Image 1 (cartoon, helix red, strand yellow):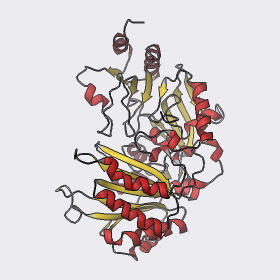
Image 2 (cartoon, rainbow, N blue to C red; image 1 turned 45 degrees about the vertical axis):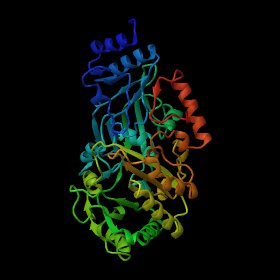
Image 3 (cartoon, helix red, strand yellow; image 1 turned 30 degrees about the vertical axis):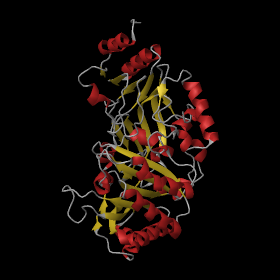
Image 4 (tube, rainbow, N blue to C red; image 1 turned 60 degrees about the horizontal axis):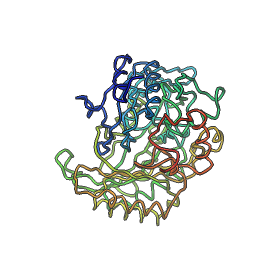
Amino acid sequence: MTSSPDAALLGLRSELSGSIVLPGDVDYDSARTPWNLSVDQRPAAIAVPADVDDIRAVLRVATALNLGVTTQPNGHAASADLSDVVVIRPSHFDEIVVDETARLLRVGAGVNWGRALERLDGTGLIALAGSNPEVNVVALAINGGQSMFSRRYGLTARSIVAVELVDASGELRRVTDADDAELIWALRGGGGLFGVITAIELALYPGDVIFGGSLMFPAEAAEGVISAAFALANDEPELGLDVGMMRFPDGPMLPPHLRGRTVATVGLVHVGDEQAGRAFADRLRAVAEPIADTLVPFTIGSLAAVAAEPVDPMPSADFGGAVAGLDDAFVHEFVDAFLRGADLGLMRCSIRAMGGAIADELGADQSAVGAVHAEGLLNSGVLLFDPTIDAAAALQPLRDLVARYSGGGTLPTFLGADASLADAYDREVLDRLAAVKQRVDPGGVIRGNRAITAS
């Protein structure tokens, strides 16, 4: 082994078929930057392996140097400094295979949902995808994953059929229920703590006809509309619903009717025909006339366009948690908390309706995420373009709200930055995850974006 950490990492440059970027390289700053631009992570190196042998080499050198290794496809959940970690960007692992007969989607660890869903178009099948096309398929799935299709078909993590990974010892493994039931249990919600994943296989579901989009309503109608949306969620347990509020900046990049405006929002996805979908939306229209309506029939390849979520990297702070008791009193307090936070810089807050197949106990024991019984998952964000914004103060009203209406355990995908798996799971699950971690990576080489317990 070479004589210094810098020399050892530099030596990887000639060994790898891919590439490695080190501090001091001209492209270090661009390579280290995650999707959340407010996170100033400074890893020991950023490796872009071309193949499994490259991953093995990175693990070997990192282990010798007592460094950690973490996989970060895009950096959506980045939160730490990572000064003692080598970051792996798996962009070269870009395969996409759709097996329509087996109803199976296989993707490499570098594939984002936008590309995967485009490949599914025309098959009549859907994956339990995130609505943002720039979110990584593997990252969403292994961290729980709540899709707008989940109330009908379940959480994304529970759709994992197989995971291929390089473990801490350098062994390439294919993990299924038959091969290692405990490890794949952990991978279904425990995140990237158990190996460097190279590919994943997910179950697909029927969905040749889909209807959905979003409705926006004036702020003065928020309480009535949000209460109606929660009632709709209760009556229609398979309907995908995302309910919340937004405050738009007063800027020229927005259409005039939205500049500086506060609105209530309802995202709706129905696996089925347009007539039934519009009937659901009419229950909301009966409360107030929307100021914007993007509801359309669509196919799975157009999910990202219909959802129309931001895809560009930006500086932000976020907070998430599980909530319960979504009655009129809750709605009143939710609207009040949002407005107080918005006056301090809060931009958005939504509550993803839970229930349906998400709470199904059948097969729950095969995944770390299990059956989630919260009524809703809250997620909120503050944009930090303005350095005078106090993100903690802007998010505090929502933290207080979640404390009063706690729904218990949540999903890692809905946690804010700096949270650990202890903020999502109970002690029994955490202990079981820790036991799997000790078995497959006793040296703690593989790091995840979320530790099993708080530091």
